Length: 311
Image (cartoon, rainbow, N blue to C red; front, side, top):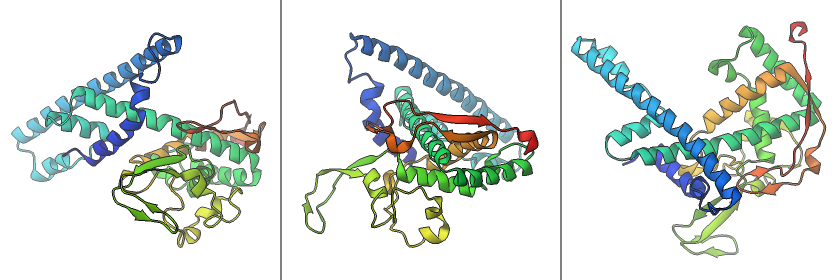
């Protein structure tokens, strides 16, 4: 059986496959030729990553063999064998067992890239825009970031990012107001009785994350940007499915923890080094409901450099 990450990515692949394989645009059009060129670059990048990782696996296996032949202690050998594998390592491992082809691996990695870069970029954009419009909240984030930076000699590590709790609440609130993946679809495996409707088995259902996140039954004053909604005491009694920016259940986003660290790592240095001021306002933004919740036109924020030596 495939690892869970492979099965989850296969679901994502079903959504992104037409885009990745140029099935929506005829290759003879100018747009089609442009897309073919871009896909060639994407696939080349992916194949390079896979090839380099396969070389690593080959050297790693040889290293384990050498340790075994040189009578390394059981504890050391066990520690090597129990090393946690990254997603690509799991895919390569599955291919070595005959479960995946090289083409399968490339497709899964392509989807991981496609599903990961646009969503995090949009969330960083919305978070910066919201902070620019709410100076008091921005100041609180900067105070937290500056303290962590000072403790770590101006550097950020995976461990220090964990302590940026207020920044994390701001990101979560940005994801509530502007979830980059604003809907999910599911097929009912059995009939489901709602209050006034019976949903038959086999029904394709579209679930509005955007709508759920602004439902006043769960979120008082839902249009207000308030990071304190995600304080532990405020989360405690909230319905578990009232907040689902990464979907929910067995097919939720497999990289949500990584995404949060990634966004913190991008946002913290920006807030540390710049004051943010709005040029355009989100209330005036007309959303484009495409594959992601993206603005159809440029949205401007002013970045004013901070003299960090004086901070």
